[in-house]
Each structure stands twice: as C-alpha cells, then as structure tokens.
Length: 443
Image 1: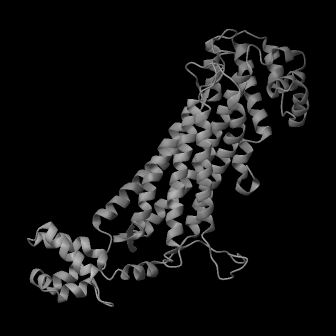
Image 2 (image 1 turned 180 degrees about the vertical axis):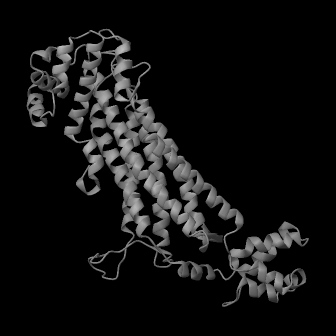
Image 3 (image 1 turned 60 degrees about the vertical axis):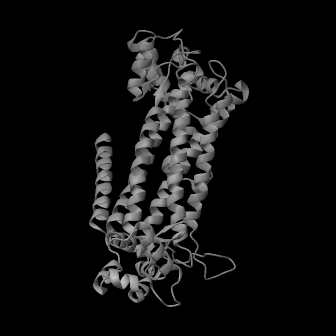
C-alpha cells in the first residue's frame, strides 16, 4: 500500500520483516512440539529456538537463485541453526508454514483493526447521545420528508456499526486457522496431533481438512466482510458529503490553519475526507472480487492465488485500518451547524408535518384517500410566502376539523420523541456491551 494511506501499526504487521518473523515463529513452534513428541532431538530444537532476527536482504539474495521464497527462507534459518539445520522444516511443505504464518498476521491485524473500529463506534455513540435533540430534515429521494434528529441519524449508523463489527469478528476468526498436514493434506510425514498442538501454541484453530493449502473460502469470506464494511464507510461518507453541500451546510469537515481547498478558488472548503473514504470503499470491493476468484484452485492446489494475496492481504488490511481511523478523525472534527439545520427545515414551510396532519385528519373521521388528496392539494398550491400551517388556517375543511390550538400542536417544532430517545439509548447500550466484551477478550 502507498505510504499516503498507511498507518505504521498495521503496516508493521505486513512488512517483509514481519512476514519472515511469522514464518520463523511457525518453524520454531513446530520444532518445539516435534522435540516434545521425540520426532527431532531436543538439542536440535534448542538451536532452532536460538535463531533470531532474519535478514530480508539475505533471503532475497537466496531467492534470486532458488526462485522460491520459502526455500530461500528455510536455507537462511538452517544456516543459522548450524548443525541442527537439517531439522528445520522437518516433514513440512511450504504452504504449511506460509498459510499458518499468514493466519498469524491476519489474527494480529484484527487485534489492531478492532481497536480502531471500537474507537469509531465510541465516537458514533457519543455523538448520537450528544445530538439526540438536534432536529433536522429527514430526506427521502434527496427531498424533505419528515423531521428527524441528527443524533437519531447517527444512531442508525451506530446500529449498522454493531452488525459490521459482529460480521468482521466472525470473518477474521474464520480466517485464523493453521495447517501442518503436508503436501496434499494427508499427514503423510507428520501426525495430526502435532498440528493440533502447534496451532494451540500459536493461538490458532487447526483446519479440519486442508489440501496443500487452507481452503480459500475463508479468505473470500474475510474480504467479502471487508467489502460490506466498506459499504458502511461509504454510506456514512456520502451522507456527510451531501450535508456539506453549499445549499445545505448542515455539517462541515474540520479545516486546519493553513489548509487550502482549491488551487484556483481560495474560498473553497471541500469534503475531502469523506470523498477519500468513498474512493477507498471502491478498492475494498475490488479486493473482495479478487479473493472470490481465489477459491477455485486446481486439484489440491495451484499457485494462482499467491500473486493475488501478496497484494490484497497487506493492502486490504492496511487500507481498512487507515479508512477506519480517518473516518473517526473526520467525525471528531466535524462541525455541526444546528441553526442551519433549523433554517433548512423551514424551507419546506411546514410540509415536513404533512404525514402528521394526514394521520390527525383520518382520526377526525375522513377516509385516508380524502385526507391525502386534501393535504396534497394544499401543499402543491401554497402561495409564495405561505406555509402549510397558514393554508390550513385559511381552509374551510381544516377549520371545521381543527381548532387553532390543535393545528398549532400539529405544526409545532419537532423534538425527539420518547421512542427516538429510547432507540438511541438502546443502540448505545448494545455498543457498550460489545466494548466491554472486547476488553474482557483482550485481558
């Protein structure tokens, strides 16, 4: 991933150094268990455990000759293990180590990503509660519909965040399996018991049945979950972009001292973070397609998946972590213009209350069709500076149905209903439960 969209914490997990360290971690765990099971000498295992940081440069030099990165890696480890080198990679095939090490990297990625994901959820929860009473226009088809509150809008995104977190947690867990079952998965050189014990040491689940590789449906599921999560990022980002339009100006992205919006137009303050996140979501969907294409490998395995995964795994993990952090930072610096929200609501001249008026008319004895047509006619024929409330006061049918006080109540400025506040409280409580569960799981 390019440096522009990279945060160091996640990038470190997917660096070349970290990759070789993860492979070495698997080799060491295998040697430890093999020694305990008396498959290799204890002294040999001890020497393998003593192998420390590997040189990526040396491994690359070896690969230029071998044309095989895992063999180059094994040669480097074997040289460092000296006379115990012949027991390095004992009974294993390349994918035993590659796939198990990759699962370690995926698991570590979740640890970092989930922490950032929780920060985003916490920000949404905080803002949902803070703005629960800030009235704004709800819009359908881009047009004013009924009043809502900004806090309730955000609570809807928090509700989706909870589904996204649950889905991602399962997907990362499903992609964190290990396999040490040999060239075609039949345990021809090592017992299944060794696989179970090594995976336990590494904090992974052993794959039930593998071929030469861990089945790629697991990774397809993971990237599909990332793509769906990208849809969440995009949905919220697009909403924030719309609300920042010059015609609306209900929210504004933070704008730091010295920041510029346009090389040609000095007045510009553009929704660049929300636009950036919209684009990143497109990349995440593309990675999902690539992962889905990796499922159908030939027989017990071919190598067509390898080139794809060398790109989408590090890039996907780094990018989704970056996007989550940037979205949180966008929300933290977001300026909420509640006076502009109120001003925009007034542009509809009371028509935001048309559905409430419709219900009250039916309650007074009109059929729904009669009430609907009458409110529609009044709404579509308002005078230049006339509100729907004014039209009702002048309309004989409405004057017969309602008193001035009743009409004033119908058209009163909207406030968050008790139900809306309960819904916000409910979803924030659900977030708190996930947050507590995450903390317990990390202890």
